[in-house]
Image (tube, rainbow, N blue to C red; front, side):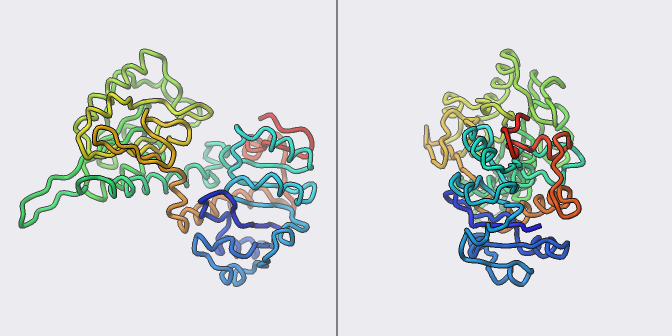
Length: 369
């Protein structure tokens, strides 16, 4: 199977779909790997490493795509590129299918099949392919560093000749993969950490990391949806959640929000009035900003200062740590490809428990998963 990797074209995207180590393993498995020159440059994987791993490195993108069976990417490839792919080719990446109806129709009309990595089912069998979890791990870690860099005080307790400096207090809203990694990272840096989540099942995970679990009256088993994600709450539960968070915020130095609901806008958990109650010099890092934001003041890729509180809305935090983010993404892709390719060809049964839900366009009419 001929597998291709192109340079990413999305603005500020520094990751690469396959790193040289994964390329080497796929070559050993009998696949032909073709990589566009410079594809790994921004994540510090030079062309020479890809060549040493057994890939063919070509400058011209059209030459890379000639005869390709599978194109792997991080972000959705440009629509114009679809016309350069051979009919019957498979495209795999973070395709943002909810906002790409015309794109999916064009791909299917061209005879292409598209698999969206963000739709890997959250099951034990597919865990090793779960890109959202691997990239959320990087984002949770990076969020603590970004917030700490803007904070008016240091995170750890320090005993100095000038006296003892007490540790900062960090509050993590949402205890999914990103939230748990943020908790662990803040704890490693010496902060006192507390966390909130509407799902009671995560209490033990939060406490096992050394954080305090903030539990409002709204917490119930009904708050957990399919796949372990949070579900949308009723009005009374939402009021209880806002009350619990609002009571906890005034004493916090750094707040990291990660709460999201699949297929829906992020829940609004921190109002402008709540921000006004926080200490001057405190910081909020909103990891849900790309889906609407958990904080009313957050804006994508902007730092908003209100009442001496800084609200950050970083976009694509995994891209700020491109080498490890790429390594983890690449391993997810490798596991998917090993599962997908049988007898030298992709096996794409509509009822497959993993690739079925991921298929957003097929050779023919667009898929309707």
